[in-house]
Image (cartoon, rainbow, N blue to C red; front, side, top):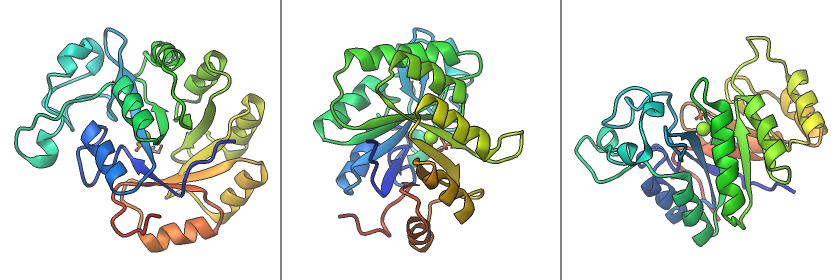
Length: 247
Ligand code: G3P
Ligand code: MG
């Protein structure tokens, strides 16, 4: 059964080290987190790599969509310069490198499928191919706001674990839809933005036999996390766990 811990490092530990990099994942590990979440999309040559945004602009020296670049060009970009405000040797890693690091360090992994628009299917196929070749023995699960990516991935990797993500309940997204999909496809988990979560939602998700997770745009405080855990949330995505005692 999918069993993520109370705290999952968010994009590594994104407030303490450049997000979605090996340095950030290594720091999460050093701080005692035994799971991390990463955002995955593909390059022009179909290599799955780590990047949150649709473009390279916010976090790297690159510009525009990464879908126009091969991974060897993406790797040349500085993925630490924005965070540290000076040039670094930190680069955008591949999912393969993350699997190697997590395997070696006994870390669990949440792979968020974050395809650029129009690349959803290619993204799933490339990631599934990698996971089929790589014998990852630690627990992991796929999540996505793009539910169709999860449904397709489930066809390709039926024994993996899956979790839907929900940012809000506008745009005709209802909790009942999510629960129906989870039931139909045997998904394990529903993840919510802190701004939409409440005890009714947590109870409904948990009563459906699913795990509830919560993420936030700002780092969750210890008192907020304690309240969420005591209300039945299983895992919280954390940008900086300094305030937390990690056992
Ligand atoms: O999976 C939780 C969280 O990573 C979802 O939001 O935007 O940080 O990828 P985002
Ligand atoms: Mg994410």
